[in-house]
Image (cartoon, rainbow, N blue to C red; front, side, top):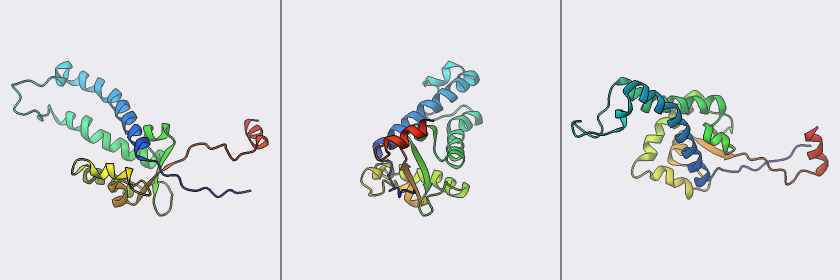
Length: 165
């Protein structure tokens, strides 16, 4: 017996929490590397620096800018979501086919993040009001973020007991 599932879009707060989780996980990965390369002084801004945004080297750029973007794209293509989204039962899919993202679509979505961040992150905030919970980056890349939580409410007791065997 096949059941027709309706699409459940991941909303703004769920996606924001996934972002926070991903940020903590990424920081736990990168901070020890930065301390190992530059020492604890890396995190202190000093008056001698020419600007607050000066960077230490190409390794700084690779670890703090390029690595996160590469990991995000790899997670989208290989697992269908970043770790934060996986923990919250979300999947990033192609909006037309509902299939996992291709490398091309994942790269486009990642680049579209920059557009969503312009002006004052409105492309991300848009998720809260959109009927399909798409941010500007989702619309530009043709993607959806679906919430696929386990819903046992419509399963009979017999089906649940058989699943446990």
